[in-house]
Image (cartoon, rainbow, N blue to C red):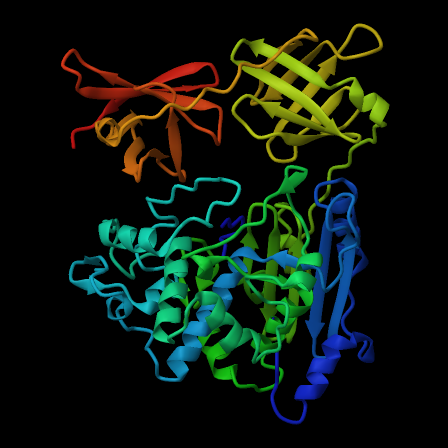
Length: 563
């Protein structure tokens, strides 16, 4: 899950419960707060520029809710609205922490219970200096567990969590060596919160995290579209996710569901915020209060951590919030207790929209300026399409979707680029530009990459150019694969960690997820997620001494470290 800011919903029971529910079915009964014109203009610009297909905003105060939507479920889809379903990613962590607090309120567990108490028989949690990880540590990101588990090796990087099983989750827990004292430091952890969700289901005797979520939170708060598994009607209202201007796969979850698996509408998420604001009492009020109450410092100035929530104390405002990012969605939910205000912003692209939510809660947070581009016709867009070569192994592939232009550099994903003029394009995901050149009308003859003060010229390839065929996978026995297991130092602090999982070799580079690699020979293995390969080196006795990373036309050696 991503966090661009440190990554980090409503019922009042009794006589007014029906009125509160009707408020969200028929919001025109109350005027509701105003979503300012500057916010609407910013969101419209993001959509009109093609950065994101659709954005839905919900704003809440004591007068009721207001919803505003702009754009579509995909670039050529139907309009989004408050009942469009989005992946909300890591906002799920606030729901998971609320479930923890609910079980605490009922006496089924305590915040400071060691997690060892709730693990399956035979699974042992790590300790450090005699101290144990507790449920509280999992919820406030102070467990000492890393952001992602070392054995996270998705078979499909477009749907990375779906094959991470309970067996893998517990195997990592038993093998991990904690790098810091438990409780001493904040380290945002998808793994820890995913583990927490699984443990809570065990504590409550539920078959799954989803059953726990639906029975203990979604149904009591009447969040009818807050689910992991969508029915036929909900599937029809499920927006497509997008990354870099292209459709992205919906994410599925397995053992780590508690960290980011929830799908929901803006209406449902704002309802969850409503109950967190405490405008009326309900069955979960004490649990909601407990989740936002305990505060510890984080590694970021002015940022505190509650249970599942993050808390900004800056610009004269305390904002309790969480955001979320999956492969094709970005989300933000937050509220101010002092002003009884709440907000949700959901987008069906990876575009960071946190600042819109923060600005609605506190206008001192400035809205971004959206860089404008010029429009091209489809006929004009055709002139850019083709292959452009820097050298035999480094090339740009320029494609189009309608009049939208995409650039794919060797070993990277295709990314939408935006025309500042008919010859100059800029990226939004990195600080770089592409300048196209031609001597006459018709297709462009070269493109120059401007980045980090350097200029590289790529010449258009001939019409018959074909990129090299992808390597073919061959079978290698597990005994041979085991010879390569170990750590290889590429540079100080940058290490390849090579492991065997099942019948596959997997590699994790420091600071990156673990990915499988596939044999094209006994010593050479290729990635499928990027255009790269590694070759293992041996000495005269056949002992593995190192590896070489082949990427972007470069060969980078890494020496095997002593085991």
